[in-house]
Length: 421
Image 1 (cartoon, rainbow, N blue to C red):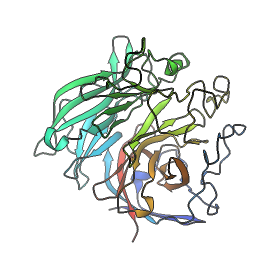
Image 2 (cartoon, rainbow, N blue to C red):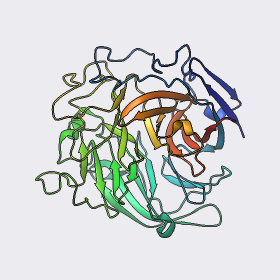
Image 3 (cartoon, rainbow, N blue to C red):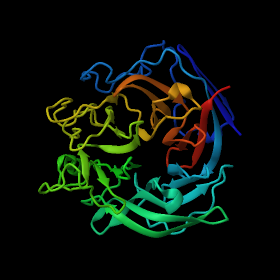
C-alpha cells in the first residue's frame, strides 16, 4: 500500500510523501503544516479575516499546540472511488459509503468498491447537494436498518431530506435498499444549490439528530432565527421522523416541534462525546467556523451574531459577535478550516488522542485534532494530508479513517491513520 509518513514534533513538522497520487489535489496548495512554529504557540499563524474581532473568552480561538505530539503513519486503503460524501463502518469491517452523485457502495476491507446498491432514491446533486450522510441504526446488527440524508428536488424548490431503509447485501459485494421511506423533510423548500448540511447522529436513547443548512443566500438565511422554518436548525426526531415529546419547542405556536436548536449556518460535522452529548462544527462565513455543544432550545446566533465576514469582506449584518440570548461558540477558527466530518476519539490505537475531537478540514486539507479540557478547548493540532477531507471515522481497530475528495468533483480516497512504530 502507498504510505504517507507524517512526523509531528513540538517545533517542526516533517512530511515524507512516498507516491500517493490520490492525495494530490489539482490546483491546491501543498499542506505545509506547522513549519517554523514553537511548542505552545497556535497552530494557525495566518492573519485573521476579521482582525478587529476579539474572542469572548480566553482560549476561544487559536489554542496552543500540545507540547508533545504523536508520530502518525498514514496508508491508502481504497482509492479511485467516486466523489464520496460520507462513510460508515459495517459490523464486519466493510465500509458503507455515499457518493455525492447519488450512489451507495460497499467497500471491502481490501479496498474494493462493490457495485452501486439498488434502491437509492433520486437525489439532487447540483452544487453542494447530493447524497449526504449515512448512519447505521443502533440495532443494525439485528434490524439491518440505515438512515441517510440527501438533497431532494421538490415541486417548489428543494431541501434536505432523511430516509430510512433496510440494507440487504449480496455475495457480489453489492446489495439492495429495501423498504425505503422518506421520514423527514426540511421545510420550507428553496430553489438553491448551497448549504444543505448535513450529518446524522444517533443519541444514547435512540434519538436521531439531523443537522442542516440555512441555504446560504441572504433571503433564506435569516430564517435560521425563525422557529416556523426548518432552515439553519438542528432537529431531534425518532426513527419514524416524529419529534421527540421532550423537544424544547413542542406545543409552542408556530414552531416546528422537531427543532432542537436554532441559529446555525451550515452544519457538516457532528458527533457524540464520551458522555453521549452532541457536538457540532459548522461552516462560518469568511472566518468564523464554530465548534458548539448544541443544547435544547438555545440560539447560536446566525446570521445576527457571528465571527467572520461576508465573502465580500463586508460585516455580516451589523458585525456583532456577542449578544444576549445567543450562545457563544466553544471555539472558532479564523481563517476557516472548512469543516466536514467529525469523530470523537475513544480508541486505543492512538492513546495521545484519547478524548479529542477529530475534524475533517476541506480548506485546511487535513485532520484538525482538538484536545478538550472539560467543555473548553485546551490544545489544537493539525495532521496535514494535502487533501480535502470530507469525512472522518474511528474504525473498529481504533485507527482513524479519513475520506478525501478532489477539487472540482473528482474522485475520493480513503486513508487510514495509525501511530507510527
